[in-house]
Amino acid sequence: MTDDFEDVLHAVGPRLRALRRNRGLTLAELAVTTGVSESTLSRLESGQRRATLELLLPLARAYRVPLDDLVGAPRTGDPRVHLTPLHRHGMTFVPLSRRPGGMQAYKMIIPSSDPPLEPDHRTHDGHEWLYVLHGHLRLVLGEHDLVLPPGEAAEFDTTLPHWLGSADGKAVELLILFGRHGERTHLRARAERA
Image (cartoon, rainbow, N blue to C red; front, top):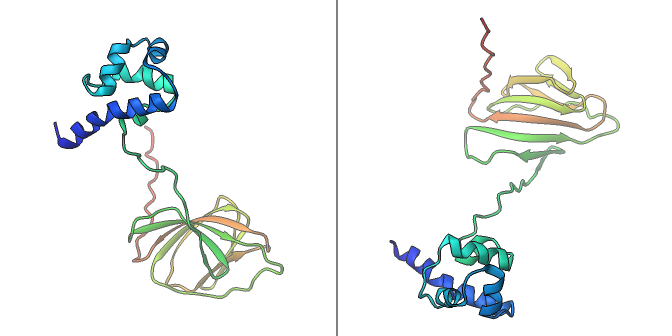
């Protein structure tokens, strides 16, 4: 076994003793609660008995703590994704992906405005795919002036002059996939059934 593993095992006994004392319990009281004999608990706390799952589970239940707390398992970290919005050109972009380069995913929020804003065409390298979640998006792309309702999507080369805004002055929410180096979104059609 590795030294790290041995260190974890040796730390279990003192951790159990400290937990019992902090709870103000005697070995006798803990034995009654867990069904594990006093002598076994004493040997476990002193390191004379190796911790097993069979012994740790009743202790975890008695102390009402996760098994990881008894053995000092390292924390795995917070699994939640904490998104940091970006604010550009009066719009909010919430990054949904974190990998550098390649396709990037964003939720974009265009705030309401009265009256609706006038187009301010922009160009930049890349390729964009968007899907309207809420509201009516006005997409001005080159000579085209389109209104996309919820559920509609568009894909375009961002080197074309373009502008995204609200068609009616109300807020718009959309998903955007953006490839800085011209990566395109690949759509697959369903296979036909025979």
